[in-house]
Image (tube, rainbow, N blue to C red; front, side):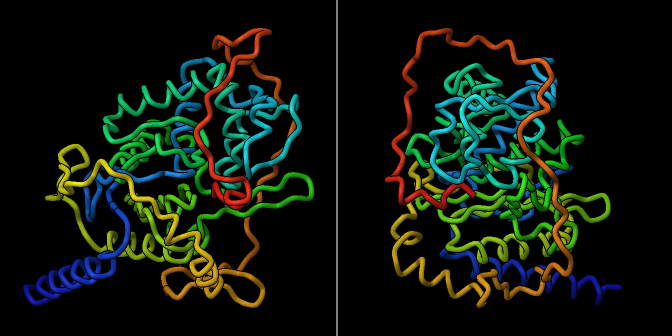
Length: 368
């Protein structure tokens, strides 16, 4: 028995050494047990980072709270305003004046990560973008997300919008523990709108044992971010990986963290609440644009694709999907539930402060 126990300790120590080496030049990461809130591994968990479309997790959380509070229902309308329709891609491109259910809108932002739909949710729930963002920041404060600030509901780049791995972990735990009935929104493999079909950018879904969420994020300034959750037995773990250099790298790092986490126990580990910062430069956000969106970096990422343009993973933890993705139908219509009664500006157009987005051609593929 002692020999077996010593072997387990040696394997765990070897993993932590390898993990430290592997992530030495990477962005922040954090691995934790969702049920207990205990931290299994972390690096620079308090360092400020641009969340990109990980922002949409807070957008969903605020919407869930609105439903819980009786302001809306899942069949309530999310209306596409001119303001929402103007958002840069990724987007659905629905015409101003059209409407879809909150249920379908949430499915779309979790899979397609559509920025126009995220803004439409904000306006439909909060009455305006500004009012919804105020709710986002209020909930962040309530959850103890002390290193987080929001200026929009979609995650397109603004220097005023930032978070940390530790804060995102608090948000993930709040979503999974306060709203377990909505867990299915984060594990959808794909959505279909008419003839258009979109598969989830989280490549652990359907490929990593137990994967059941949650969200990807990418803008040039953030690099490739991923929050990945997986459940095995009664245990759910979450890995927050920020600032990687490709979709493949973020998926493989998250898979490595999760796989090793399921081999460890967390009884003596510190919790998210007791975790303390160690980085002296944690209030300065890293801008990854030179490393992510240079011509050289883009060309290097093409090496991760096969002749058909599909991503190729080197990790044995991420298995090829041997079946067709399970697709959920979404689209306009069916929104016959009550509308939010949040105050709205009536008849008088109010200028909406917008964060400084990059040039349009630079964000054409951002927002995953």
